[in-house]
Amino acid sequence: GAGVSQTPSNKVTEKGKYVELRCDPISGHTALYWYRQSLGQGPEFLIYFQGTGAADDSGLPNDRFFAVRPEGSVSTLKIQRTERGDSAVYLCASSTGTGKKETQYFGPGTRLLVL
Amino acid sequence: KQEVTQIPAALSVPEGENLVLNCSFTDSAIYNLQWFRQDPGKGLTSLLLIQSSQREQTSGRLNASLDKSSGRSTLYIAASQPGDSATYLCAVMEYGNKLVFGAGTILRVKS
Image 1 (spheres, each protein chain N blue to C red):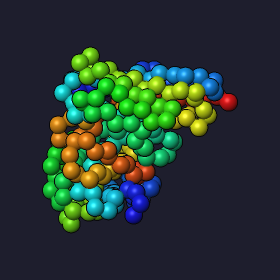
Image 2: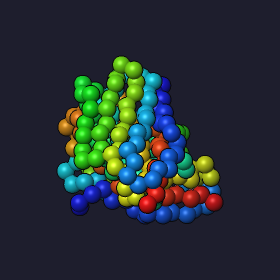
Image 3: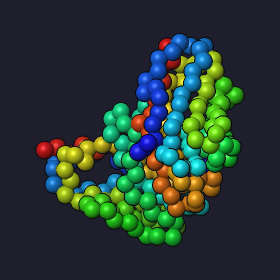
Image 4: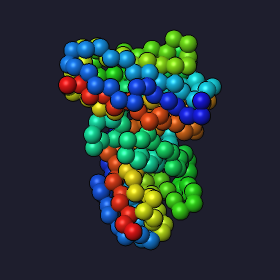
């Protein structure tokens, strides 16, 4: 596609439920990133994929959060036993993966609300 | 741990004014610095990217400078327009390709 797409755009769930958030990167981009943005704050890094593998998952807050990218394209962020504090906008970005000079292109985000 | 601070948190100016947004970071070991624009309910749009070896970048009415040694960057917007109203985010890229963001400056340009 022309840009990074994320689905769903909005997700409302109840505390304790499991959710999956999907990201479709720009075609051909080997690097994919997940960030989380709380109200009034800048995005915070969660995880970075280079191809199929997680190159850096140091930003995942705890073991309830997990992300996969099995074929090196689409990625899914999975949150188990959701808590109210998980409510935020989850942003996905992709880049060509060729080096440090590249721009990350962001999707519109998924707005998650945990009741 | 890298910390990025943006000043001011919010800014309201009349149309046509030139304005400066400020960004500071605590660790100068960065690969690059980027300025993004975020509109309500939307993702981030990259405005300017300055490599660590560069001093400034320009695009249209926007000019961004970088002083890596002092940990500062400024975004200059010339002849502001109502369409410039948005949140402006500064981010530094660290080892591992991750971006560390400031909290942003909310800009409102009044017509």
